Image (cartoon, rainbow, N blue to C red; front, side, top):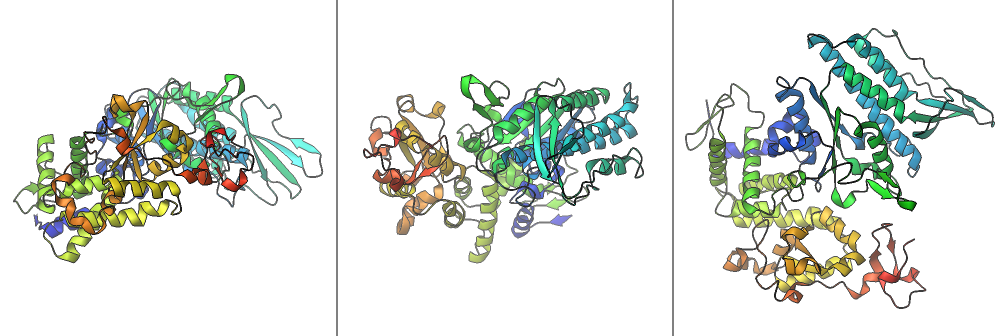
Length: 592
């Protein structure tokens, strides 16, 4: 048995805090995930989208859910499986394909994703072949079908074009619903293709091996992928393998726009819809950032391309991580207590037994009830934090789990420097302001007239809230959406805005570090009664906001045209480039 002092508890928590879920595998994400209650929602046979800002736990939740389906509940639901994929690992980098080649990026992304999916299917088949008893009818055909699928995806329909202008072709029966990828194959021998990798997993090298594609220096090819044929092949494989439900968790969807001049999200979304959304077996879960969400476009004559929200894919409050606490401070407090407890228990060995300073025994062999977990998390807060300091730490995190972990480590480091027993409110304030200036403030243009105006407004009102008219928001919506995306602002949804205000204004709450900075040398004022309502993640609305809204309205600066940003094209237009609009009204300008 190991006796733990306060210092050893802190050390264990610090060693378990990871700044990014990409550093963790599926099982590790399952153990640190404090949001397992959403699994019941994700298990529904409904294509769903998870919205959340960076660091709100989308990746952790999807990877934890994948482990839950594939391991934790597998014994009772053997016909269910889950596949997790990151689309940012499927897109080309600047070396492979030149930035801006949109058609190439689309086809490249889809092809890489399908190659990863084919590898997943082969792994699943290999595992089922060893363990499944009895095997479904025609199970022996699956390996051939997977190899045929791999060939469909990798080789596709290549149309060889000689640079001299003459053509030779393979598979010229090109069908509808195909995406193209142009590539120069000069001097390239594709020896390390997916077929070889799949074959090496199952057989000795060479058996049923796909042919190598060799080209000379004077040839190019256009890669064509037949979506309908691939969809039919996938459906056949899944049915033969006896799947009831296959969950596909797609992460980092918005990152496919990383190197493109305009969004390719609608076109990739359209391919995903054609591939998976009509299946009776496949259920798709996609993680996205609301301010960067571009999964559908409406073309002329009303044609819609991509995945339509509330029609093809659905969102729910329980999996909207931007408002997962439902504006309830108690829910947020409980969530972050659980998160810190999970850090403490993370990767504790089964044989390990720990005695805490209060004499409580903790071990993986001791199964705790919810009440016992709650009691242990309460004790950790009391052991490590002085009065209200943990509450202010949550407030400074902006409700973002990743930021909470960063602040937690920073507070513990500062605690060691000042040689205090517990983390005090002053330590928390200092760490919040450091994080605000070092991380959040750095992502905002310093010359911004809008943000400079917001800071001046907060400094004058000494209130975290401000209102902006719907008209002003529409003038610079992209800018405000970006401030929300980088956690500089928190936007309240219309359902919690007082009825008298919601049709006229949008309501924002500034970063807690920004608010603390507004006091400058008067930091001692933060401990008086006026601070009580402001130190929560969701502060109480001022009593006079409804009766006197003008006191809280932030007006856009007069120089707004110098940084006019339009929500459709996402382009900035400088004032000097607007010669013909002498009236200076942004709403009269046509976007390029």
